Length: 144
Length: 83
Image (cartoon, rainbow over all chains, first blue to last red; front, side, top):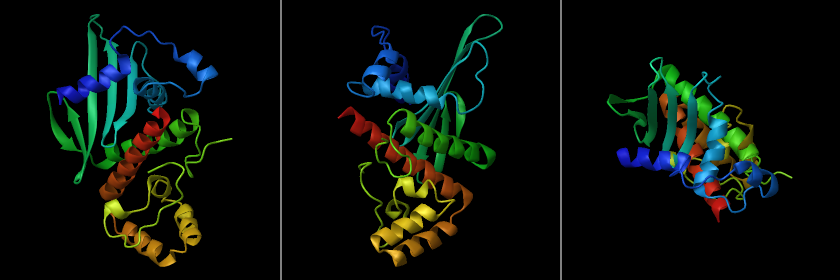
């Protein structure tokens, strides 16, 4: 499990050695030459906005890691000034969507939480297809 | 799956893996894209079977299906963008 978390976080925040400013690539070359990490960062920018306002001092990431994994990562500084972070992995299994958090018993999503994730995934798809990949979400065809 | 592919209608939809692709089922609540796809592909009977099957899914199964298909499709689109 730690390996997947590590991979997800490394893809998002990198190793600290590559200070790439995505704004330049966005405007000049929409997707050309972007790495997987950079694409995931762009997707996560949208994903982070799907669950309402982000509390002041928090940093949130939400993105699709691969064919069977979604990642929610949140960082913040608590009232004592200590840095905190929480990572949740949503895994697709034949039986359902397994919620995996370190130190917490794994459980299959159900009820409102499953409904909310499903809606978020659908909104993610709609927005990421249009805003990152410039494709019509319904047909998959490139937007003019 | 390539994002440029047209809707792909399974000949014998019987399992989750056989269900139509993400951009079809994502809009399953509207049903129109699925029906239009059936018309386009001349697969009316097959798609009706798929729709009947979908109607029998539980809330959890339906969510699993949607999230699974979006995940597969997003990974495919990302891979295309990298190549």
